[in-house]
Image (cartoon, rainbow, N blue to C red):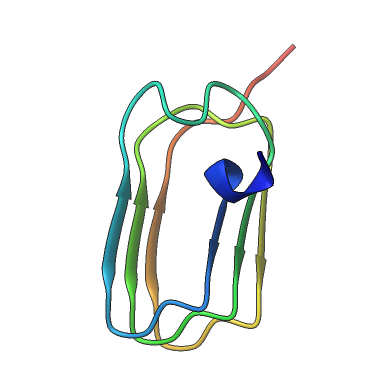
Length: 64
């Protein structure tokens, strides 16, 4: 389900993805404003679009 790997339309929120919730998949962050977004798991890659005044913490990405 793509919703598990997406944070979108958050305003003034704190969103935390805990270890084991992403498991190396691609992650998308979009259309957020004044939010704190924490992804504490490893990722394949991350895309961030149309976010304003956000603090975003990303875990490590997979390497080869």
